[in-house]
Length: 96
Image: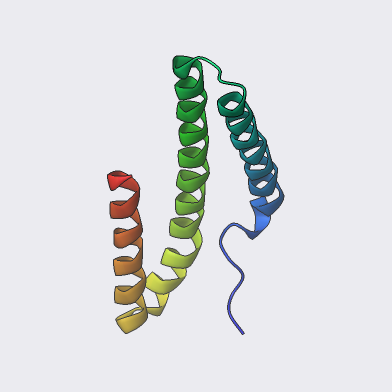
């Protein structure tokens, strides 16, 4: 059995934000379908990107405060594995 994820305490908040983002994406699709002005659509795409980045940073922060701390306490191979995993996730976020 795995440990609870670091975001367990804020799961409902994350789900609420993701549902809001989902609604924004549906709104963007509707704008495209209705032939809205390109710049207005791009503005909404930018807002969705920022919202997703905010969710990602929150999850990363919780991961570091929970999973990485636990792995650091455990030491050894688990610590190295979790640090590499976090580093790779940060690199993906920076590239996106």
